[in-house]
Amino acid sequence: MKLNKEESVGSFFTKIAQVRDQLIVIGITVNDDDLVQTVVDGLPSSWETFMASVSGRENQPTFERLWHDCIEEEGRTSGKVIKEDNLALAAKSKKFKKSFSQQKKGKKPQGRFSDMSKVECYNR
Image (cartoon, rainbow, N blue to C red):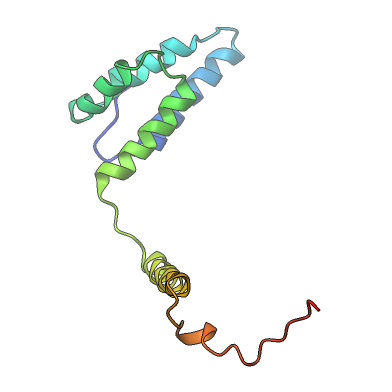
């Protein structure tokens, strides 16, 4: 099994897991090390640096751990575009963090937290 250029890492691992499950159903046990080796053999040469870092680990990862690591690597290297919703959410959270950090420095916050005259304290 080989990872095609138009195929995602998730679908590649899913195919390998399906074959493993089919083999288990007919009574053939599959060693986790064999699954990891199947993945390593199926990744293209563009993954060579990543696989060198994986094989340089003290302990070989499990199939599930390698699956997780490969999905993270694919996301990191693919340069996926952040959706507009995520951008808006990130901008909003940065604005809140800025307002919160200004409170710590003694500066007056702006916006929603600026008018404290309407706040009532119930701790008496």
